[in-house]
Length: 69
Image (cartoon, rainbow, N blue to C red; front, side, top):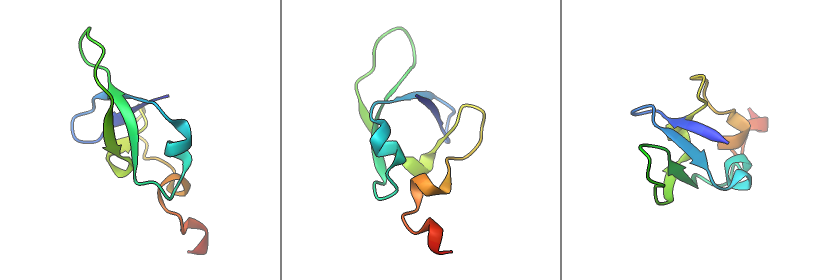
């Protein structure tokens, strides 16, 4: 799955989908897709990521207490 970073719109490949879907995890491993070279994996803060369409990530992926509000 690919997401974009909020600060510069770079395309990022999510390396662990379970980490993306887990609301108790604040970071996930991903790899930026820039240029022709394969980039090294990095940690990304989930709140700094959006879908390529510009939509934010679902609250249930970010907030472990989303169902209590």
